[in-house]
Each structure stands twice: as C-alpha cells, then as structure tokens.
Image (tube, rainbow, N blue to C red; front, side, top):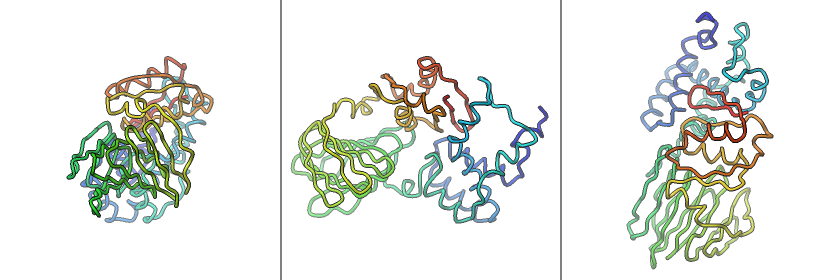
Length: 324
C-alpha cells in the first residue's frame, strides 16, 4: 500500500493534530496541564476545535461501527478501501461547532480521559492507581482506579466528601460522622465501613460493617452489614444482600467475576486499563464469564477471553480493542 493510501495520510495537518490530541488523552495519562494546553491549541483557531470534535465523533462511534467492520475483516487486520478512506474516517462524522468541541472536555467520548470536574478534584487516581486518604477526624477513604473526590465544608462535626467519579471505600471511626455525596445521593456513616461507586448517574452503596444511612430522592434507607442499594433515575432500588468480599476485592488488587455477562465484565475491566475494550458481538456479550485475576495482570485478560470464548481480537490505536 502506498503511504498516500493510508487514511491518516489523506487528512490535512489540522485533522492530524486533532488525532494526536485524542491519542494523547486516550493514553490515560492526561492531567490538568494537558487540558490547559489543549484549550490554548483549540482557542487559537476555530478550525482546530472543529477538527477535534470530528476526531472525537469517530472515536465515540467506534463501538457501533465495529459491528459492521467485523463482518468484513480478516482475523489479522481491517483492510481500508483507499477510495473511501477519507470519507469513512471523517466525512461521515456529524458537523461539530466549537462549543461542541468544548463539551467533549465535560463528557469525554468512551470515557477516554477525565472530565473537567474530575481534573479539578482535590484527589484523583489515575488508571490502575489506588490511594488512601486520611481524613482529619481519624477516618479514612480508599480510592480505586479512575476515582475523583472533592472535599466539602464540614458542618456540625461531619466530614463531607463528594464523589465525582469512580469508587471509594470509607472507614468512618466511632464518634466521627462521614458523609459522601454522589449524583444526588448521600451516604452517611459513623463507626461503619462502606463502599460507594458512581457509574454514570447510578450510585451503588454497600455497607461492609456496622450500619449506615443512604438518602436520595426524598427517601432514606438504613443499611446493615452485607447490604447494598442502588440509586438511579431519580429513585432507589430494593435493598439486596451481597458478599462484601466480592465488593471489596479491588482493595486486595483482585478482580472477581462469577457468572457475569461478558459485556458487564468488560465494562469493569475497562476501568483498570488505558483505552477501551469493546465487545462488537451482542451474543458474545451475553456469554457468562467466570474469572479471578490480579489487577496488575489486567492486560492479559483479552487473551483469556480469546481462549475461553474463541473471540476474534482487533487492536486499534490508543488501546482500543475490538472483541467479536
């Protein structure tokens, strides 16, 4: 193939720069300085913001597009069609304005980089990182991967924290009240341990030890040890009993799946690695996955899925992996 036949060679300089920004963010190491540099780059010329929006639209539609690509690919690579390369790569993306490009910093495509609110957090963990934060009153909070929290003003002796993204385990000492806010829900504990996770607009709270309260949507529920509740779409679900060891396995550096639909397991795995794994076959996504592996070995899970289910694997730039 001639170099000019490759899709990237058909892009102009601004589109190539925009692709470079997307790939930089997708590497999972973006920080506040990167975001500020991007803002300066985009503000210098409206065409740059438009190009970045186009590049992100392409990445944002990789999942749906991959299903069609999977039908035409061999098991080694996707063969581009030179005469359609430019149109397929950027021509099909919807036109985007400068304002649309700015909104991508708020809602990054495929969750490839932190949002503006996450970058402004008081504490934030990178991909695969875990961190313990000691609170002034003697309580503590463990942050899982891709987690951001902000410290809010304490009132009446209550330590107040906002979970902006990700997952945290809170240990509230006796006589020390800790409150965690997350997407309209409020978890309050004193002399208890609990796990709280924010995925999209859904908040999952699990009481590990002791007792606690969860308030949301005008309702308040009291949880005892080994109980869990989910708040989403303006309402709270029914309290369920859970295995606390499975919920807190991440603190031991382990991921555990028991008869979990592969699509759900992949969503969880994606939190611990740069880029994104995308299941392009709906039937494959419904297959049940049983596995236990170290988070430190998360990169090997694609090979495991390939062996167990006979899935085909296509690797794309930026850590994007298609499973079909």
